[in-house]
Amino acid sequence: MRLLEAENHKILHGDVLEALATVETGSVNLVFADPPYNIGKDFNGLKDFKEEDEYLEWSRAWIAECLRVLSPTGTFYLMTSTQMMPHFDLFCRARAHILSRIVWTYDSSGVQARRYFGSMWEPILHMVADPKAYTFNADEILVEAKTGAKRALIDYRKDPPQPYSTEKVPGNVWDFARVRFKMDEYEDHPSQKPEALLERVIKASSNAGDVVLDPFSGTFTTSAVAARLGRKSIGIEINEEYVKIGLRRVGIPSTYSEDELAKVKARKTKNKSKKDRTGEGITAPEVAQATLF
Image (spheres, rainbow, N blue to C red):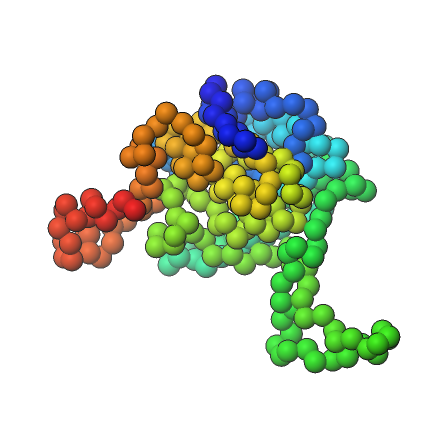
């Protein structure tokens, strides 16, 4: 395992269980875990497990480690596929207190199932070590209270009378667009999570100066948002190409050249754009230049 760090931010390059073993017990205020879902995606050459039992055994091991490093007042957000969440839920409810079962819903991206109802959401388990002592900054994550019209009602129970609030704490159904190829935050990764989702998680469940851990950092969105919001971060990642993304996004010095850390814009899928299919628009050299920015 390799440690790369700057002030307040660390990247642990290596196996998740080996890396977690180096983290001090009870030292992390917030964990956000978005592991491989074991549904056949290729993470830059690293494939999923073949057997479900093997995947679940491995998952229980790293979840237990995340709970070990969580502080007594800490919070743990855990994502997985809709198929695997029942297994994770049963395992976690015996070891932590589940506050919310969150639904992250998004548009279909044009992908249509033909023999069943296609999935347009992913589950997030929101749990805490102690249900009587945990961080939840409601005022930091308020959203518009949509009622179909602007509320102009007055609460005459207060002295002096005050308009009713037009904001509220979000419910457990979160509507964030998935990261698209043309978005500025896009990175070359098959399951990148949006910055807006991580911003809500980090604002709600941590404070400035707290330690935020992501055991499967991928594009290091968790670490990047944590840094922007004044938190400390620990990002664990086994894939060197993704570690390079983390070094760039978090601003950690390294021996890699500027070219090696440059942002490369490539599609997550093998599907080609219309211009690529027809050969129209730009020439091959121009394509190569257009993918870097």
